[in-house]
Image (cartoon, rainbow, N blue to C red; front, top):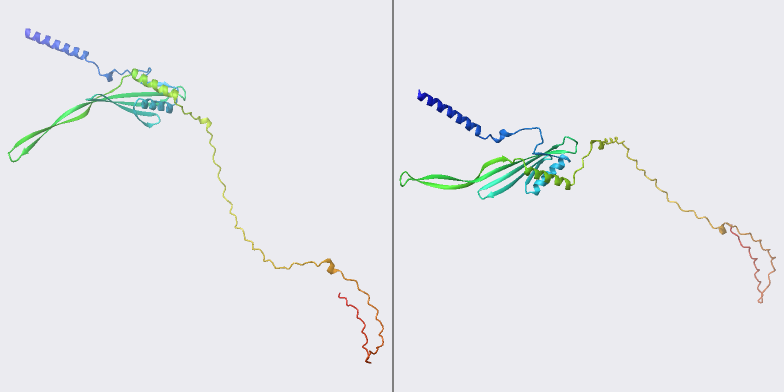
Length: 266
């Protein structure tokens, strides 16, 4: 009877201990997510377009030594390496997403997430045996140590002053960097280009061969003095023939011939 009582008491005590252990064990962090509809610590509203906010986020990460990659106009990724000690290594990965705001077209919401990856230096021993045929089945172990970085942790950085400082730096670059001006759809006027008319075929011009010129002799008008007809002179009177006289020797003299009147050419 006492044995059965002791067994029942021990079983009840063990059950209570198990329940107490289960109730005292901490819940995993992923079970503590609230998913409430309030303000998110990983998001912030800005009075700028998505292009401007992502550009400001990229400049904010670059100014702090992060290596960034802009895959799209609304996404920015960045990484930065840390070395807390000689045997540990930390890599912080940033992921930024810019979406349009809820109020106007010139507002945006920036979502940010940072993951901290931890690496540690681990030493691994490797051994191998070498058999010697001369000595029989004797084997000699050979050991070597290899050092390598092993990933030991990966956790999202919790909300707090870390993201507040990042959002403050993004706002600083939004105030100092020149923003792009959005083009309103109503300001863009599209006008169709005029269709060119078909060209009218034009006949080739017929070459005009100039007529040969005849060699002409210029006509020179005679002077007025040449055209004037001189006045006709009156004919001189014919003198009568004188009788022939003898010279000193007694020869008869030749009678003088009357002078002829000058001829006038027309």
